[in-house]
Image (cartoon, rainbow, N blue to C red; front, side):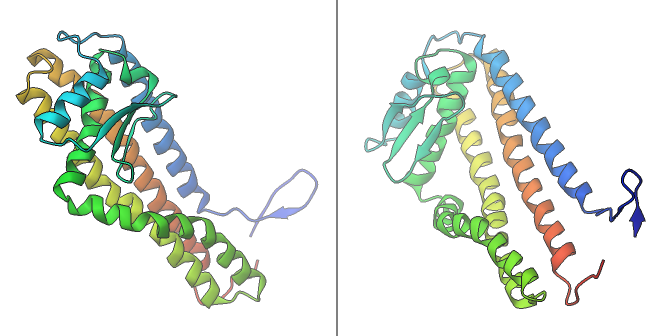
Length: 240
């Protein structure tokens, strides 16, 4: 038990807050890096002059994929591939832009479309996990709080922790999906000559920075799960 000053009330310092701080710092650093890198190479025009939309169309056709469309979505860094509608959605800073960053991001999203077309197992697994991960991330705290309120009911708390684990599993499975999409993108950009040699390393920098955000998200989720296990995973309540 630690005691503070101020109004004279005692307080307990929870050392697991350190895990939350680490997770927050990792997420912040990753986000700052991707924003800096994307902004830097958004100002560098690609030599071929191809826009993100043009790159996406060419990649899909070169891979023999004709049932996937390319659409424009609003926002910044909101680019994504939707396997349900089979659409490569490109943001304002990518769709009509011919920067190295735009080309790299467009190619990356096409990488996901290629994964879907080829039946890439980690992508299929991630898609299958999505609904359970969404439910688990939202409902986990309900079970944990109920467990604490109901005389520290360990069964409810354990169910809550297991449900949160589904969200963690989603973050972990996302890693090979994102790294593979980037690897496919870089390989295609080089083989199809959509970027000149000196630009390929810059495209790699953009995609590496983006990948680090997923690494940070996975690490943060694991740290949060670890904190839940430390705080609530025991069989006995820690009376304070």
